[in-house]
Image (cartoon, rainbow, N blue to C red):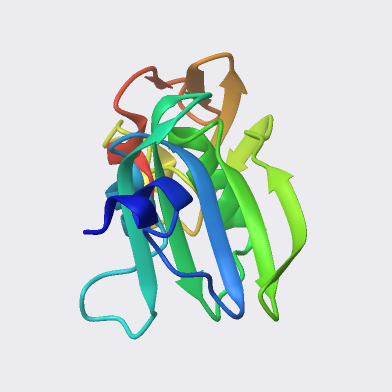
Length: 155
């Protein structure tokens, strides 16, 4: 690779339309792809940069997705594992919207409760519902707490 291109930030080309997810915690980009349902068998045009030098984070990941704008519930899921991420909506190669992510006070249908006896894990038509209390997520139905390894519980 030409070192001049690296210094100019040309690792990944710009996109015409779509979403750029920036400031993802270094090493978490593949989890973001999983959250978005992007696998090797899907048709999206995706660019991923991992462990890029960042003055703010030290290392960060960046994901660019052509022709897709994220839904609010997808942004909520990303916020759980990348709370410093920024979402840039690109149209005609221009940033038309730039926003940070926020973890809402209540997460509905975003996480699977780890308690196998929770009503949300039975055949009842009930979506999971968690209250966010700092770094702890508490099931509103059975009070089970998720305090670590949040990404493994994301639906």
